[in-house]
Length: 117
Image (cartoon, rainbow, N blue to C red; front, side, top):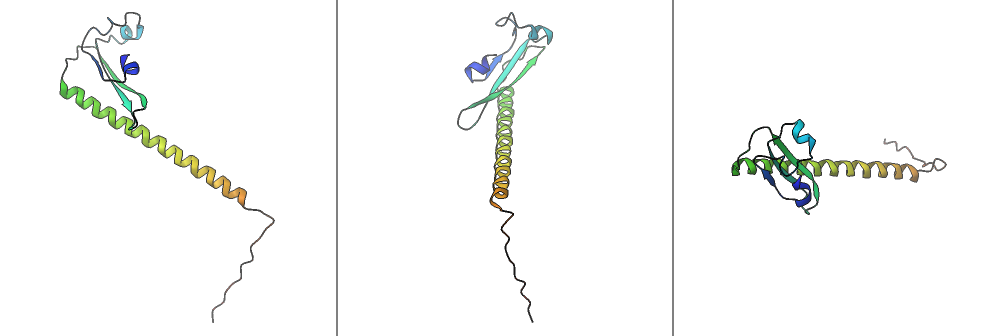
């Protein structure tokens, strides 16, 4: 839909199939209305979008749109958190692998046991 290309909230309160007459999914879902919100990171990079189709008209209600934008912001934040965790796990895995390479099996450290009286 338009959200992907415009990176803006798009609300089509009714007759959603009019601008998209060839979209067979709209007929399958019997979609009448659409609301889509872009998922953006703080740098403004597009992460995707969150959208809802309804089989009834969806009147323009600012509270509804604001609530949906809040959900979209939360979804974008969660997406970022998951990406950061995956990057951290990747770094930890590489670090563990590098530590293993630093160990040389032919060199052993002598450890003296200290006995206290």
